[in-house]
Image 1 (cartoon, rainbow, N blue to C red):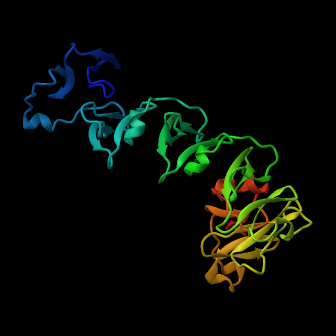
Image 2: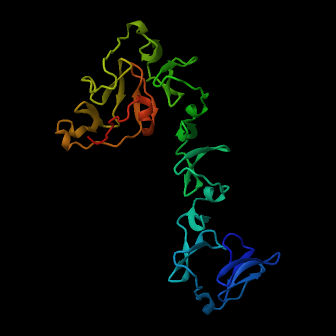
Image 3: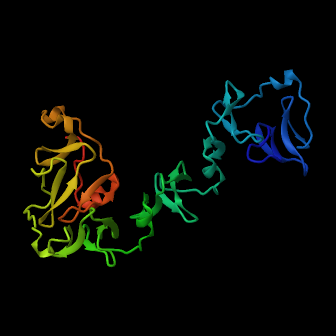
Length: 329
């Protein structure tokens, strides 16, 4: 049979062992009359209709191999006969761990690089919009959505906006610490996963420092006059009465504001704040649909600033192991 990895070679079965053979220079392997033969690629091979229907035997069911003459096709061994299959959409056949599989063009054309830690991620150095995931022992390419770029933080690749990706990489030591950004009245940073992460105050607010923390406030109100919201037990959660879509977590002795996703509202489940359907605001908690964590806005400072983070950053940002943004009660 022809070698799916090389058009100029084929395998010959001798004493129940496949031996790779090489075609003469300038020729390629083709299957003609149930045999692999080397032919001139520029010369048409005459094949009768009966030969076209010949099914080639294969030794082991579920074996697979790519079609050496068509990247979008592969063969699978079914009932000890090779059956030709097509890859879906714009994918092509590649071989990983001696198994044929269909992958996107970027993955197929990328150098084959092995990896050891399953589901680990990394950014691609020569393409800032592409990241890789360790899958089945090899790095597989993926692309960030929209106009996002890949950023590697805390031993993981993540997709972020261009401003965040272009920001200088500066380490920090104190988790959840905040500071205003020099040269910008509205930008501030949060210490997350050991690095300063950029965030922006809401429109109409500016960043200022108070009691060692960044605070977004009305520029018409002096920073000294902005009231603090002290709390006594770190990790305590509550739903404030003045905003149904907001919840608060006691952090470093002060209430930090966070918002529920979309149309959800804050509800209390024991001593935990959870976010549920607004339509179920008056229903018993057991009847409210709770939502899985999604991208959310976090008012890390004491004012009304917003900071876009992905759901996997919740634990690192808050320093608690279970923040109920729709987790089960």
